[in-house]
Amino acid sequence: MKTDDLITLMTHDASVGLRYGRALALALGAGIVVSVALLVVTVGLRHNMASVFETARVLFKIIVTLVLAVLAARLATRIGRPGAETRFPALLLGVPLVMVAAAVIIELFALPDNAWRASLVGRNALFCLFFVPVLSVAPFAGLFWALKKGAPQNPAAAGAAAGLAAGAIAAAIYAWHCPDDSPLFLATWYTAAIAGVTAAGALLGRRWLRW
Image (tube, rainbow, N blue to C red; front, side, top):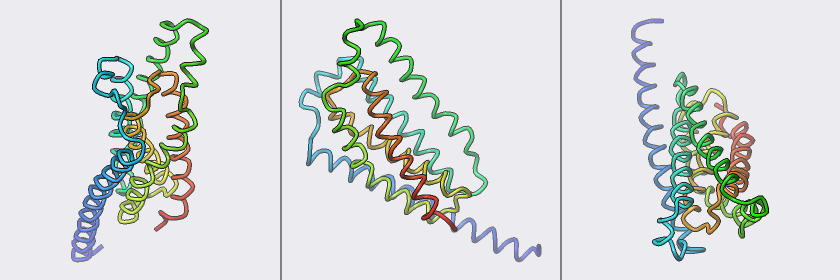
């Protein structure tokens, strides 16, 4: 390759990377703002949020969903850059999984057997399955828009990463309303809702994120 051609290519890649970075920041910021506003104007925050912060279960639910949202968003931002390291960010997703698994084990030991089912089913399982995907729509659309400005090497994987990030962000926002605090509920219904958004992202990414 000629030197002039190499310089031109590097300059082009730099401008693409800059546009991609700005698009990601805008997508994440706007998506979070829209989802938070949607929660507030529809179901609202939990009415006793100030007092329930004294409960370890509530703190854990909010912390673990925030950790997942941050790690998933980090993976989604990197996967749109050709050649960027994604293995370690993907492995870090195991951290919130281990946190939830440990909390479930503690919950099973702390509760009598006849209370397990009630804690798992909770009061709003179906609403959780519905509303987390609804809250994920804005960050999902924003991340797809940003990824189109990048150059993901694997469109399906990029779409799945965007779906995971959007679902995790939505779960972290929904946690401020959800009255079901058991790790059993979190491990079952939050996981199912996020998995659904992730699967949708993989399917849509295969078609929309080709380049």
